[in-house]
Amino acid sequence: MGVKSKAALAIVVLLLFFGSLWLQGGLDYHWDSCIKGYNKLHHLSNSSEATVLDDSVLIKVCPGQTFQVSLLLSHLQAGPADPSDVLLKPYLASWDELVRFMEALGPMVGLISKEIETKTTIIRQLAWSPDDNPEAELNPEILPMKTSAQQKDRAHTSAYRSVRSMIRVELEKDMVDFDQQTDSGCRTLLRLHRALLWLKLFLEKLAVSPVTGRLRSPSDLCREAYQKSLANHHTWFVRRAAELAFIALPERKFFFKLVCVQDQDELSMVLTKVVRALEEVYNRTQIALEEHGMLDLP
Image (cartoon, rainbow, N blue to C red):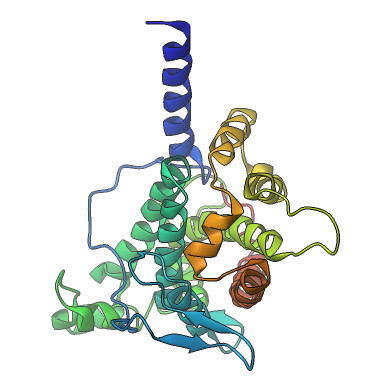
């Protein structure tokens, strides 16, 4: 095997390992395959459909694409609930769409999305567990079945209905350990919360149109967003591996196509709307975790 082949193999192995460590705590535990995802309440069958954001911004449905920014926005906007809470069902659905966004950016970034899917699966498993669902104990018929969207909806109506209800129930059941790693939804939510900040910062930077000078590359912007967020929770080794993953990001024109816009001005308008919705969800989750001293769960 030549030197170049060995170097390429080393990079692939490094990135695979990095993907498993991305959210810190990575694959600490082995989870069986389970029901995946959230059955979308919004069915988009007509490629000419569009979501009206305000008087000047339309988000189009992109034909032939797995990722739909219109769906992402609708899930994010459905998340906030009073008082200062976030509903878990649309929150996890937002992550489903963000996973599709990352997978569209190529195999290197796609490795990161696999770890995020593991985290959303953990919370869904807890939400569907009869042990943590008081309603299920009284009425076993509401337990979710793999093919029933209605029963999946019901699974989120009690203990794991929202961020704050999950925190309250897990504290009452002593599921959260502040000194060592546990399988709690709160710990898992914290990892997703940190990754959400990274994506929020990245999309925020991608939306900026400088008055003068050239637009910066998505690779540089993603690296900068990472350094201000997830890098603070990663080891030196994982931070170096992240640098390799970001090099593989596509150029800016790819993002125009991914969001179904023609130029940077249109991209800025769409992403600014998405970032605002992301920020609302992030801030509410931040407050809930901070109030209960959960921002540094191991």
